[in-house]
Length: 165
Length: 288
Image 1 (cartoon, each protein chain N blue to C red):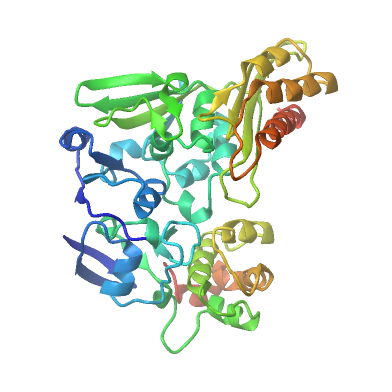
Image 2: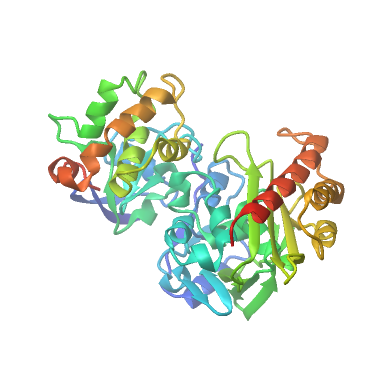
């Protein structure tokens, strides 16, 4: 059935079976392969995307449920040529190794910092508990997210606007 | 894995949704936030012919606080409860329990009605409903009815809900000011289903003795339980060390958990005593 929604600022219309997850639709139909699929049942967090401002698991949403939604994937967080402040912070703190979980970490952290730019380390850990990383470990990831908070505070409006959901 | 094929409908009225659910001889399922049903589909544990998406039924999203208590529309999400500033006073136990539900991303989509209908024995919302004597309103092709939480949960993933019925709302009785409460759960990893959890509340009489004690246990049986023997230990007593120790022992004695891959029966039995003890200590220590 036909479904229309907005992805990274662009209106799209796709033809999908009702059983197709939004994650598979983004990857296979729209070729936005930045969204990774790990467990396919809502445990690993790799497929996290931002739907109408909220971080959600794209494997636990049907594409048909996205009708009329505004979706931001990891591709939508920065211009092609430049990393967002959060992405720069991941690089600075060595917050990734194999990179499989990274899109989900970045989208989750972006949604969190957009709403709670003053969150503390305990809150970052609590939120990232829904994203599994099997190689780097969480210490550097938490440090990267905490270090990126300044870019999301109102006084740094320009940097924040770069990837607003 | 990939989900089995199904048809999909997204009705705009409740009566249309009920008619769709009734149209497949029990082979249609209501889809709320999808945070339990979609994994069931992905594992092919559920293979309905038709999914009826409730997302356009805006009237089911409302959270209403009144002198009668808190009415949670079935499509209210966990995050709607956590974002609601009035609920901290109107039902602090609910808010504390919902904060423990799964993970951030799940709380952005999971719903009250979805959790109640799914009826996982270790889920927080069914436990709160049973502990607080909530009433669950449902509507089906033969009309509306209200089911007491005590009668709603029949076993793991089994409820009193008929195939053509949709949960409309969950009503929690009014929460008096100065009520004492505690919610404690234990899971090996943050966000996992609890191995055991305890929800407690009680009021105090003029002398500071516990009255109207309610003690709920989650994750230790095939459905959420009220632990009446523990309530009997508490009512009329001061929450001193002796009473708390008796409540701990009574909680362990009141349950008959099974061994499973997550924990032995003996471990769960001990754990629920500790959860009740900690919840009571939190209730007693919190300023009112």
